[in-house]
Image 1 (cartoon, rainbow, N blue to C red):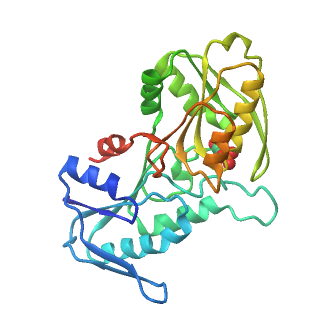
Image 2 (image 1 turned 120 degrees about the horizontal axis):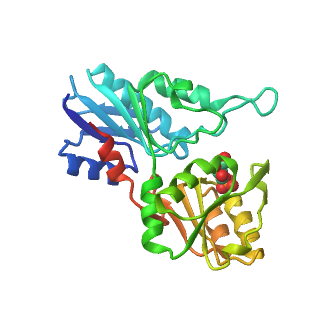
Image 3 (image 1 turned 90 degrees about the vertical axis):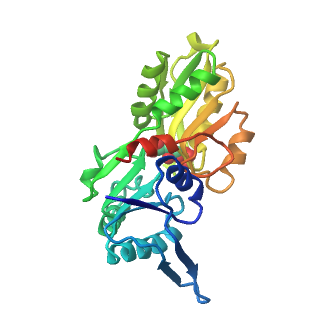
Length: 290
Ligand code: R5P
């Protein structure tokens, strides 16, 4: 099936890299707001019988969702199959009814996306209480992992790393990254008190005094997890922490707060555009496209 690629606003860099490397045409469209802020979409390219690949990272998803929905529905109306590449997939963390009456948003969001895309490609979605995407998504999902890219970056940039996972959920990617590098790792205990408050306990790390701690997590949102962990590791006598997040959401002043916490470096993958992006995921996505 011939492929044609469409970038939702803000996703042009990755979409153009994919298009250039795989020689896919870039779809022409008009996506704009009417004066009353409703969305207008028009596709100018011929997409009939083609696989339309939409690139849309889903950080701050609420405002992105309706334009994406209209574009996907339109492409299907025009005869295309729709593949959604969402380098960051939102609403994966509300995966349980933590308190009576709460929405399990990850399920509702999955149902919505499954209703208008034919397949989904994403990177390190926050699968914690779910074992696989198929538990909530009804469309085929390809899950890509940034761990090999992160371990290459650490190998090239950090001498004697000690990988640190801030909580039990992080063990999956910290263990995988450490195994690829043959390097030690520790996983801490985290208790989330509220959206912006976490408690972390650190095991005895005295034998790692000469190592550089590298904190690896899937998401940096308020950065409280990294800030509190970095503080504990510094109090335990370790060197300044290098912080690596697959997805740097950096809500509010999180990036500045993390810098102020005295960490060494802050590095993220370019699943969400940010000045901390140093690990490029475009080849990972390219290799996943048949
Ligand atoms: C937790 O479930 C995730 O893996 C991250 O540890 C968490 O989302 C980080 O959030 P924050 O930066 O707000 O502490």
